[in-house]
Image (cartoon, rainbow, N blue to C red; front, side, top):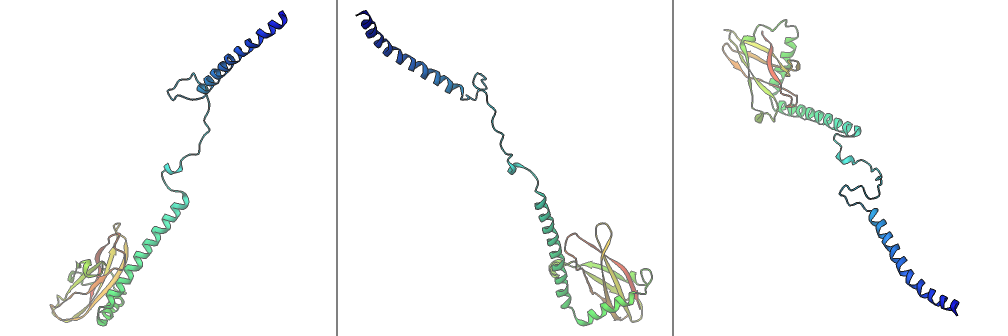
Length: 210
């Protein structure tokens, strides 16, 4: 009977212990869960871990990839060529509006100056005046003012050089005036075929009276 009584008492004891153990396990599990979560306040009491390194954010990089730079350079070169081609085309169109007689005089002036040494004998009779770009389709053009200061009829050949900011001659144009009476004046145009930028400066390089 005692053994039976002991067995009867043991069963209720096991029933009372089971909830306590379960509660202890839940508490331990909750503590482990809290330890695995960072509070973000710099407390080192929790479990430590090393975050997996992430790939760099290339969107924050400055500069361009080599292929992009090459593409940009090609684009700039193409723009420069297009500007030069456009300027040359506009110069041809503008010159086409000038009379054939003026064009012939300009060709004769170039040929005449081929054998002239130095600056020629008529630089004092020639000056340049800028012409508004609004009147020349945006081209650089100068009015070549020629005055026959002699007392006889004479023809003139003039070479106009266009220089860049370094003083280098980047373009040369020729204009002429035929059979100017004594004291008469002529005002042919010297038109650059270069793009508007970089800016150029025009000067009388040669002038010959003949």
